[in-house]
Amino acid sequence: MNPLAQQLNDTIAKENPHVFDMLSSLGKQIYFPKVGILSQSAEAKQKAKKFNATIGTALENGKPMHLKVIQDTLSAYDPKDIYEYAPPAGKPELRSAWREKMLEENPSLRGKSLGNPIATNALTHGLSIVADLYADAGDAVIIPDKNWENYELTFGIRRGAEIVYYPLYNSERKFNAEGLRSALLAQKDKGKAIVVLNFPNNPTGYTPGVEEGREIVAAIKDAAEAGINVVAVTDDAYFGLFFEESLHESLAGQLTGLHPRVLSVKIDGATKEEYVWGFRVGFITYAGQSEPLLAALEQKTMGIIRATISSGPHPSQTFVLHALKSPDFKAQKLEKSNIMKGRANKVKSILDSGKFDAAWEYYPFNSGYFMCLKLKTVDAETLRVHLLDQYGIGTIALGETDLRVAFSCIEEENLEELYETIFQGVQDLQKVSSK
Image 1 (spheres, helix red, strand yellow):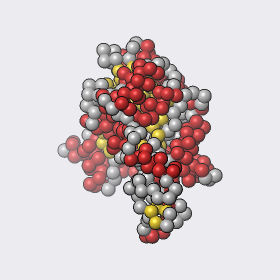
Image 2 (image 1 turned 45 degrees about the horizontal axis):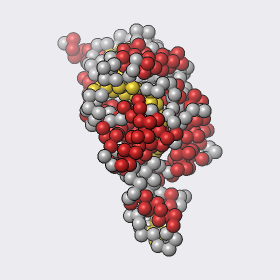
Image 3 (image 1 turned 30 degrees about the vertical axis):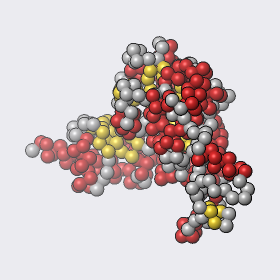
Image 4 (image 1 turned 90 degrees about the vertical axis):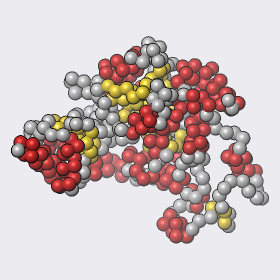
């Protein structure tokens, strides 16, 4: 094993042996090289005042070389803020700004041990890093039965982990904390579990209430007290898009410092929150551990980044930083959030009219981009294809009964027509089946 990796492992094991046991075989082997091109280039950047012939960029007239056809569209930005490589952990100013934003929006994180956010190539990359660092073949990854399908690829296919499901809702149509607890305690023999909490949920658009949040945290604490090491991952992709009474903070705060056997890992980013999907700017943040342990986990995370993408895109990090520093940022974000809230409320008013009750019921939703219909009389995939072929309407079929509808991309005035047409599609299929 590389001495740097061994040094990081020794630090982690000393600071919290439970966290060391959470690491995958890859997680134990990975390190960020301190002797190599990046470290030598960094040293040269500080000291090579005459000629710096280290890193693989091209300079011209003291600035990064660039094409006019590109710079003309980016003239508001200094070439050094868009063309150079960003550091593997991300643009330092952006990391600091995101940390400030995170603390402002999540008071439960204030005053707690919190690492500096590490920039990722959006949220999927952050989840992939978690999978690489903590998931080995056979490890349990616990997610609800209504989930983002990429979890299976990221943790199951890529890392060979066992995906363990529990029902998202209980009989009262609230978050099923007891199902989560049972799934966790079933891992007693393994002694380890990775829990992914995605709120607002994709595909249902559901965020638990405050009491439900406490029950989730209690379930994870119960597992830790039973001797299970828990990597508690909060996938906060749609954070901030809360339209009703629910948790308005990430559970990462309540999970921070919960128990020595619980590692709180927050995954978030500008992708959905700031409506910049193509920018691919996300963050991974560790919390609730000692400073040496946080530093060691950061080094291992940077090692994964260095070994996969080397570093994230610099221009989009600069654009996001520029937005966060703008005095107009909060007002503009609130404006867009209110539009989304209006669409969500309109969907509820349409569905609560009773007109469509014979065709479907809907799963509780109160946040995010989506909602999910539970069809009563027709197959979801059959309906999806029919709507696409006959009416030019796109939806997502999930299993036999569930149809996901993204109200985020439909203007409020068009929502009634959308659901009327989906209902018409159901009636079409019913007529065919009755013949």
